[in-house]
Length: 173
View (cartoon, rainbow, N blue to C red):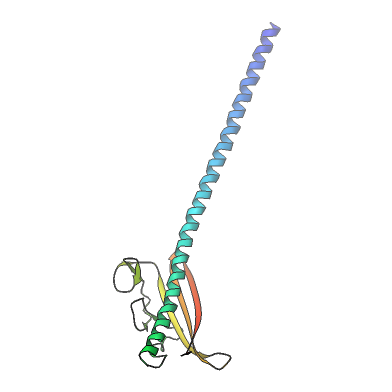
């Protein structure tokens, strides 16, 4: 009988170890899956944020290019290089889109997306607002310059984000 009792105890111990092993394996598996979901969630949030920042960077650069194009157009028409670029000082600022030939007073309007182009006239509203501030200044060498600051603002997850860039334009003609 002792031999049978020993076998039974051994089998009981073996099944207890098996149950403990299953519980531990399940815990490890669930922890790994939850960790993977957390990483996927973070990556998804980061990709969305990165995409918005990239769009804001391009819209900011486009704002600077708009001001530069107006200045260059003035030279081609033999106008004063600052024509149409004054009256946009802080804090009011101005706005313009890629097809504008002049700056207009900032109205806080959202840019619209129409056929892959951002503008104020047609298309679906986006979450981006662009403000262009042009301030006449004198650089350290005494040259007449226009200090251009373009800011793009958007709302993301309940808070406002801002991307801004600055460039000095010169009358080098």
